[in-house]
Every structure is written in structure tokens, then in C-alpha cells.
Image (cartoon, rainbow, N blue to C red; front, side, top):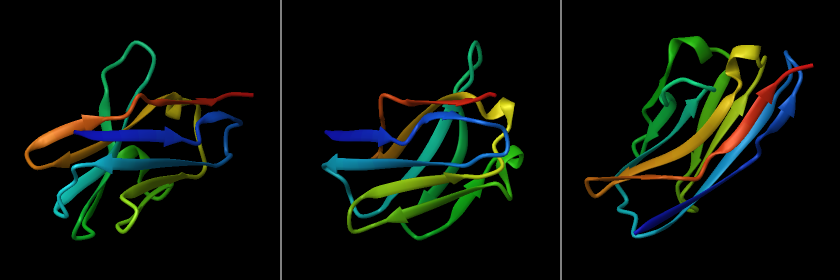
Length: 115
């Protein structure tokens, strides 16, 4: 089993920044993918950014140039630095790890972009 704990969500004004963090613990194989998904109100959960254990990153087009994913491999942590936030970035953000053929999710952290 793998446990994921997210932190760092909150309320931010448009144009502001937030940093999300996720710590994974449990049975984690060294080859794994970690990433962030988000689910806006009334919409489906979709991938925002991911990073393999080899360092390959992937971003959805809408966040390219604004969000940066990073990992601390020794601590099994993944962060998402979010800059220039927009109203449409409002969502519950979920941390995800894929390891040993399984996918695990955190409980989510709410990011609200509003005045």
C-alpha cells in the first residue's frame, strides 16, 4: 500500500502563486511516476503535470510556462509550483503515484483563484 498526503492549497488572487506538496509513503518501487491531477467543480479529473523517476516531465498545454513540477526522489515527494494563476485553475488538486502497476491517490487539496 501507498499513502499520499497533499498540502499547500488555499485561496489566491489571479496572478498569484501557490506551491503544492505531496509526500508518498509505503511500498514504492524506485521506478515510478508521480503527478498532479485536478478536478474543477462539475468537471472530470484530468492530468496537470507528471514526472517520471527518470526525470521526464509532461504538462497539459494550459499550464505550460506557468506550472513547474519537481521531485525529491529521496523523500518520495512531488511539488507543483503554480505561478500566474488564473480563475480557471480553480480545482481540487490530487497527487498521484503509479508504481508496481498500481495507481494511488491523495485526498486532494483545494485551490481557489478568486478576488
